[in-house]
Length: 200
Image 1 (tube, helix red, strand yellow):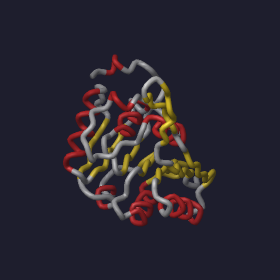
Image 2 (cartoon, helix red, strand yellow):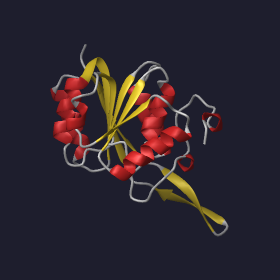
Image 3 (cartoon, one colour):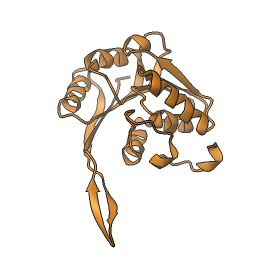
Image 4 (cartoon, one colour):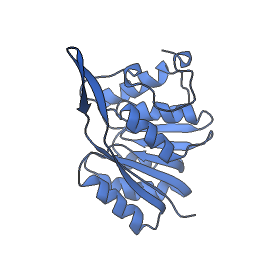
């Protein structure tokens, strides 16, 4: 796949355009489109994608920030290969893979304009603390959560740190599935999206 096969400037690349591997998580199309809007990207942004998984958010960010750099942080070796494969499929040269476990891998990176946390592997508190340290003043932190515990934890952290414009939304997506001659709604798991701007 090349860039010419996704010639649009809007986020929300269809899921089937990404290379997938069973067991490696991916932020789905509709959730991804909202995440990108909450990140408020700009052409030269330095972005961290923590828990990159398949690399779908990494790719979307890199397409929006062509003059910047997107650091894809992922501890799973199989997922690392997948991130690189998807970056190549979209012809991206501004993606840098950072293998290993966060938050330790965040320490050596340059300060970030935007940070997305899509996975924490049980180290959410530590990742949030490091993300706060590495995020530039005025930068945006966005996280997704699928468990009841993670969303409130992120919201509480941003509030306690005095972030501006803190918000949380719960997104429920349902898609049609054909069953015989009829079409039924098939619900996907709800996802929480939490965002805030670090004080200037």
